[in-house]
Length: 569
Image (cartoon, rainbow, N blue to C red; front, top):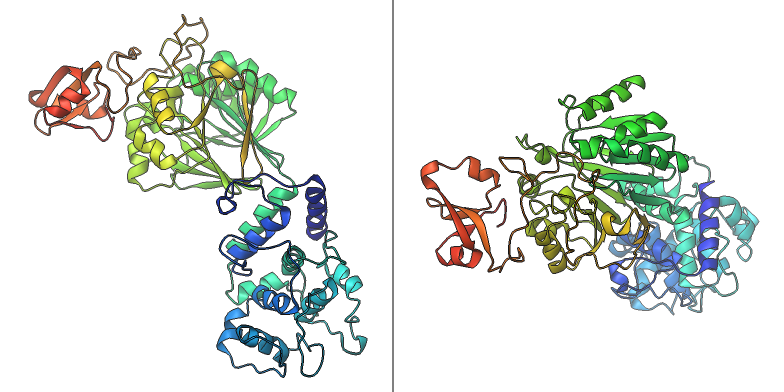
């Protein structure tokens, strides 16, 4: 069945043309279906190009090339090169002696005569014959097939994808036959060629599984993230291979929207529901999801929290006889052919934002980072743990608060795209100009729910595309004149970390590293480090060493102070 799906996939893809990808080695150009297979075979150590940047798949292979490629696919290249295998052919170049000798001694080839191997272009029948012999089948005296007509047996064994051109045989066809052969059973055994190669340590089961997964992605590309516009809050629906996960649900007033969003798409089962942290603007709308859909696993950083919204979430779970799973950093979960890994929290913080579940979803070669409401403190923990946060798409932390998305975090995440889930005209000045400045500096294409509504990201495993509810080409990184907040847009617990729990003003200046505008800072006169007033380090600072300062960043640096590595003032 898998073999038929693979053949069908190649037919469809080749009829439609070429598939977009972000594969770096192709310099950003398009990639064909055969190139995808060639890439996976190369990563398994079973295929080589003519150079570091080209496979030359559109060229006919010679008989020698075809046989050399077969020996590599069989995982026997090293054995051939290290052995002393003789052959009787006088027309074989010295570089190919070891390969042809191995093939001759192991009955994979007889040559075109007793003394000539022949180096004309290989035909489909020639390569299929080589492969069938490698699988244990014989063409001598028509034991299993005739050497000049291997097609029926090749189709029966499953090594002949219907995209192979029998008349115009190319190196691309060698690739597709070779890949199909990995799933073919060895004659007289229950083992496939791939299983034999795994047992011989040519590659690992995990490497092969990953290669098959990447091919499967192209068989049925089906990965979407819906960044749902819930005003000042977070909500993201991930769909992969018919499986679904909801990360946060906006505030309590968003419950009906989340309910309708799932119902309109017929999603009555969520494999996972994730509450990144128990603030209302993240957990509030999850009750609406649980009123429509049944859930498999519910994930949250805590099992108890003193709030009406979180209690309602727990009550809805109890109706389904479910309890909260509190994950550990490093835990991984499957969602169809995608996988997501919990990266944080790593430490318990007083500020709930810094207890946010931060997770990374990987689909093929694309990845998506969800930062919850993590601020500098949690970002610092993640980086200190040497966690891989590199991603194609970043869901910006804390709705674009200036306390999140530090330069160092953005540097290591290195996203191509970012999504800010935020309410129009909210009273918290989200997204802050400092964050927009950092995203501009990092050259990140940014989408915003306040300006563009619900945003849908799709991945084929190699590249991502975006669609928006409105204003696809909006300038999302230029600060807007803030309008008065709508009564329902502010959500709850969106405050930046401050002792009075009130949203700070955006301040003067651009907020970039070289800003000369006047701002408020806290100086540690002992360590000669300066901080933003909301920095967690300030609360631990001795009163005698703490000095409030209103002025420019450049002046403080000129006084001999260094910026805090946590809040990055």
